[in-house]
Length: 344
Image (cartoon, rainbow, N blue to C red; front, side):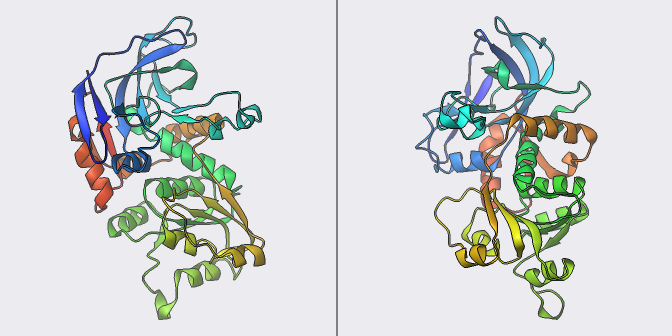
């Protein structure tokens, strides 16, 4: 058995590990695949060292099959395909008692505050498991966690069929927000600057614009939104870049009483046009991780074939190439979603 341990800024160590026998209420999962996400990249770059105990197994977008059941676990059998909702809440704080366990005051994210999925054998609480259709490809299943993020973001933004959604940032999460929003019947425009991602999203049937490039007759991306909405503006804006430019852009094309959903994680404060929020009576939402209903919806959407996983997954690497995958994600280029094969 092998596992990928984060050992400090840009340090990944692949080591032998001993499978942890599940205690009462736990299961041991044979991990098939695990996606690399933006949070993993923040960990790798040292941005989350204040939260993580070194060394720690990272990763939380895992899919696999049950290898062993702990005492008292019911409703599952060895061999069942599953995914894990990788958040642990305390159940006692005011947020949890109000039903908002996903923003628990003591929230632990598996792969940061607890051992993650970048390992061959992963022992987790059984109450975090979601069963999968037995016919589902486990590579595709590794996309369920980020699809659940997209489902939660769209639910927070109250996006309705026929509304106009503007997605700022066409990386893995932005792409999934756009795909799910279109699947739900919204009109969607994505802004993205990476040529590889622009081309991919267009192949997938999405409308994409590079905000740095002028349109016909020198028009801007804001002009395009206004033209396509009859001068009203976007019903919902999803800010997924997590950078200052995105924070500046997000108020420019929102309609009066439009909604803005903050999805990207900002490493430091960014300037925001507060006047436009006031003048247009905009509503601003934060959206963090997901709730159980979002995970359940994500499984249904992936099972339906609505997510073009074979296009979005640009590379599948063995566990011992995780650092190479993280470096690729850090530098950008011709990459969208990288999966780690935890059994290879």
